[in-house]
Image 1 (cartoon, rainbow, N blue to C red):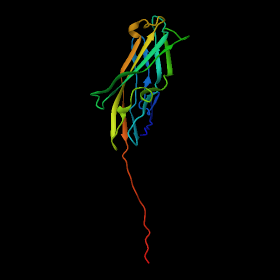
Image 2: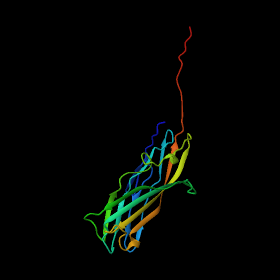
Image 3: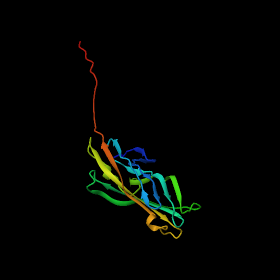
Image 4: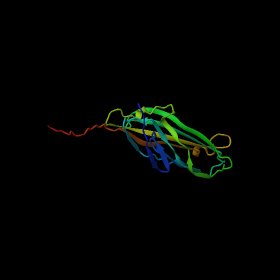
Length: 203
């Protein structure tokens, strides 16, 4: 069966496509206190068979810190994802790491710094070649919709020159695990029709 779904959503400086569902924007800070501010938009898609082949997200945003006691030399970012039922009362698929990268700040290491407009590239959350199936998003019944919630967790560690959390360590980690977006796949109702005319004659 041909699987085809395409969706693009924008918001908060981020895009996603489903083949991708969802949008994520990254931002955060670490100083006297550290915090994360992350957003994701709801998304929906309708197609002929209700199947979703791939769920992707392209996060962009900023990371900043100030007044650290040592230079931050590396920004380490991890993103995890899980799928919840529509009412969020049950877990359909548990936490899985969907992204990890450590960015060395060669020539940019400092005790105070801000980077904005950064992109992590396109992340395949489910389906595609991710090894994580996208079948939890599918709606097999004609004319019906499947509604689930995707929850994302972003963890950012600011590392010093020794590879450990920069000092002060209690301000060197930013975690936000309450990033959620609703994903709805609709299997369009099938229709059929016929029309024509008969030309008649008598002799």
